[in-house]
Structure formats: structure tokens, C-alpha cells
Image 1 (tube, helix red, strand yellow):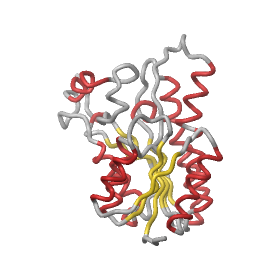
Image 2: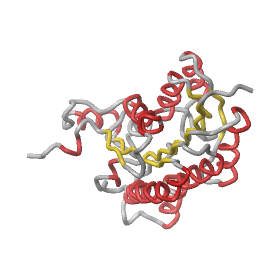
Image 3: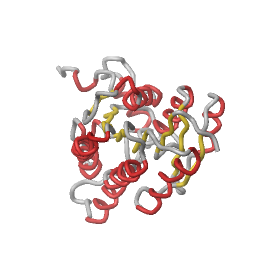
Length: 255
């Protein structure tokens, strides 16, 4: 068993922002537990390959954030494998279309169980094992974190709820100097946003990019580097905050 200086758990790390973060951590000498959902079509082995290519350390652990037991096993993997846990990043999430008229209790509860309660489970399990002075980040969205989004009220509610969760956790864990922050990504090119059924799809993202001051949508690596900053000692006095990463989308005045 190796003992790196820092160890992170990352849910939803088989692709997108989670994969980019595992690679970012590898370059910083941080070992990762790559969380992957068994039903995810993306291959966590590709994340592991990229981590190894960056001379980093990581292990893959299946996790279903709908299950407290599964998340507990996931967080414990960091301690069992590396002897410690320093960072917890709650990145796993789902995205589904549903108008208000179609919003059954089941659809509502399924979304919140993953995108909000799943984050609670991740932060709670992480905090129970975390070294004092550690750091946690939850991934929100401009949908809910800033804007509303038609036919996605359950998703937006979950992402908005994360902000209150993070603020409260930051206060509660402050005496242990464990920090909790949220990142609010804008339009980022990930497998989720490229889904043309439940999100914008490739053409929708391309059109939306024209309205962003930077002239394009963001890349997962550009969000990962911000998460890396927030968990690092460079942000050691930053807690309870929500940082928007959107290329200026939310501050652009519309004509």
C-alpha cells in the first residue's frame, strides 16, 4: 500500500469533469478513487489509463450514490488503499427531461436522490473519514445554481439545493478546518450536455457557444482546474462559497 500526500474520492469519474479532475490530481501528486456507476456506459479504465499516463495513482471503485452503503464502501476504499482521505468531490449526477405536467413524484424523487441526496451521502461519508484540514466540493450547475431551465425543474431544484447544503456543511465542519465549496459550471462539453434528448446536444451546444463571451462552451479540464484550486492549500481560507465557471455567460447583458 502506498501513502501519497493527498488522496481524493471523485464520484462520476468515468467521463467528463470527473475524469478530467482525476487527471488533474494525478499531475498534482494527488491519488484518486475513481467512482463509477455500474450502469455508466463510459469506461473508467480509460480514466485510469490517463491517470497512469500522467504518472499518477488511482483505483477504480463502483459506487451508486443512491445507496448509503455503497457510498460508505466507496469512501472507505480511500482509507483502505492509501491510509487517508483529504478531498471529496461530489460530481455524479443525472439529467432528465420532464415538463411540470409530466413531473411525477417518482421522477422528482429519483432526480433528487442522485443529484442532491447523493451529494449529501458523498460529503457525509467523506467527512467521517477525512483528515482535519481537508476539503470537499459539490458540482452544481447554472441550471438551478443561477438560471431556471424549462422541463428540468427537478434538476434545477437539486442543483440549487446543493448551494445551501455546502454553506451549512462549511459552517458545521469549520472547527475541523474542513472546507466545503460548490462549483457552478456553465455550458461545458461533457457526455451529459451532448445528450440531444435530455440536454442541448452537439448542435445546441454549438449555437449556445455563440452567446458566450469567450465564443465557445467550456471544456471539462477548465472546470477540473477550478475544483483542484478549491481543494488545494491555495484556497485554504475559502469555504462555503459557490464559484461560477462559465466563460462569462451569466454576466453578459442581453440586447
